[in-house]
Length: 488
Image 1 (cartoon, rainbow, N blue to C red):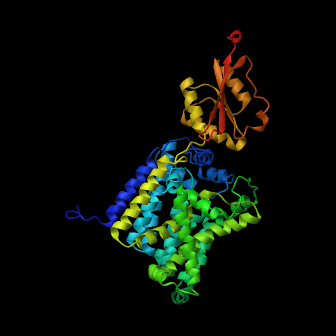
Image 2: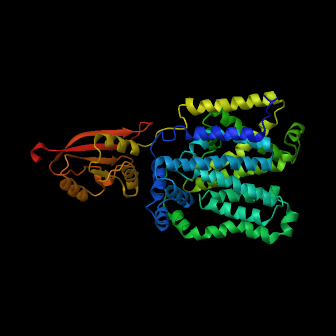
Image 3: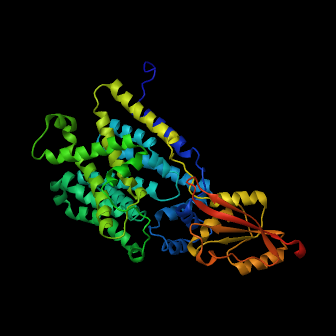
């Protein structure tokens, strides 16, 4: 085949992106939106205004950029599970492109391509390319922030790179508060890759550029203060040193790949520290002129992980696996670098093919695949639609959780949903309905409905169905009430 057509890096890259698109679109609507996604969907409603979105986001614990972008996407395309998820698939593909550009800048086309291939079949990146939350955007912007950061510190200080860094890093801060840890990682890494001669010559330009994102983010400081003062629940992970491995295991959804990845990153860090005292010939030959780049990637990984880890050790935990999706970029680049160093093309390609094939099998054969049902808000609405096209529905949830039902009542065109019992009673009487339904949120059950659910006079409880997710956790309950014969 190569006699007539010799594939280039770009051809393999195109195939990787096609494969990535297929994997990210596969089973895209395997489940309804879960709680956090429904918050994004609620803010993305085209009926909202930007000011109302900002108001709603005061109730969240994250900055607003992803929600606002989702809002504009819904305006341009459509407002549905599929549309919102496709938006994040697009972001996920952008994340792969950012990884390629960063890998090419730090190493070469070969390493960049290997990193993209590994990312294409990565469990974690696929999962969060399908979720209607900001984590895919966090990955994408972090990579491009580092991309322009490296360019600037290598001496490419010009208006284009400076503006690009400021805008991208500002967008990163407005996407997730962990963007601050990306900037902290850059500060720590700067001592390794900085060219002091050039920086001193253009000191004020560098100062304005690197302070710029913080100044532009300062408009959000009042809401940040509100978020910091809010008491958060203890559902986050308790910090432990095992997380160095367990989080990597979640990234790859496998113990073997996690062991290889975490071992290579840790060993790289150890060798880089020890080489100041004693250089090992084999290692020096392996890393050659990439010492500073590898040091930067190790520092990026370590600082990004350790800041929230130490903070969580003495106060409320910040440890949630998905918040650390940023770490996949340096980890995959380190893996790709060592893969590129394997002698012999056949052996190297064979190992790469084995890793990719094994990763593909994990996606579909693992007990915990990258698609797994977590809620039943869509299912309760869909099944009720089959039972009755538009019955009066009394949906019961805590105040901030009403959106879980409201979104799918809208999606399935239920016009008679009520959250107030008096309003439901009036509606049922006005409609002379033969039946009405109650949707009860079980995660958790609203306090005032734990003992009993009020019932419209003249009706009786006919049947009840409880919905559970894949992990057998009961999520919602549907109760049907029918009109008594003596009331007909």
